[in-house]
Image 1 (cartoon, one colour):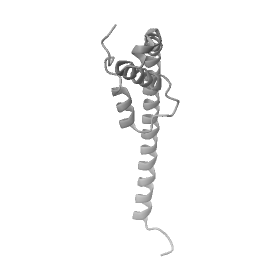
Image 2 (tube, rainbow, N blue to C red):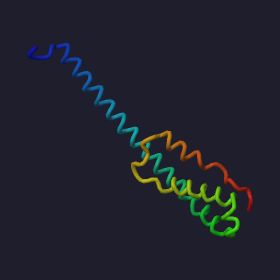
Image 3 (cartoon, rainbow, N blue to C red):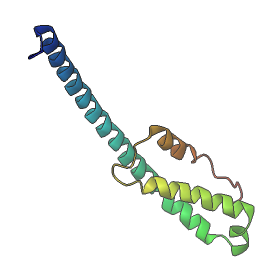
Image 4 (cartoon, one colour):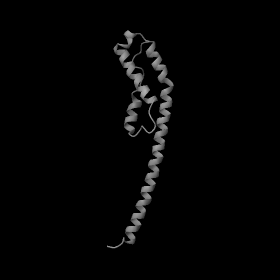
Length: 110
C-alpha cells in the first residue's frame, strides 16, 4: 500500500474533526470546572474566618475536647475549600467529597 484510499482519508478527516470537537468540549468543561472552583473558594472564604474566630475564642479545655477536635477539623475543611489553588480540581468526585465535609457544625454548643 502506497497511499490511503479515499474511504480511509474520509475516515481520517472525520476523526480529526471529532477529536477537535471533543478537545473544544473538554476545554469548555475545564473552564466551567475552574469557575466552580473560584466560586467555591469565594464562598468558603466568606465564612472560614468567622469559623476560625469562633474556635479561637473558645477555652483551651474545649479545644482539647472531642467537640473542639471535631470543630477544628470542620474549620480545616473550610480552609481547604477557601484555598483551593487554580487548576486544582481534576477529579470531580474529590471535589464533591470536599464540599460534603461542610455540613452543620459538629458541635451545637454556643
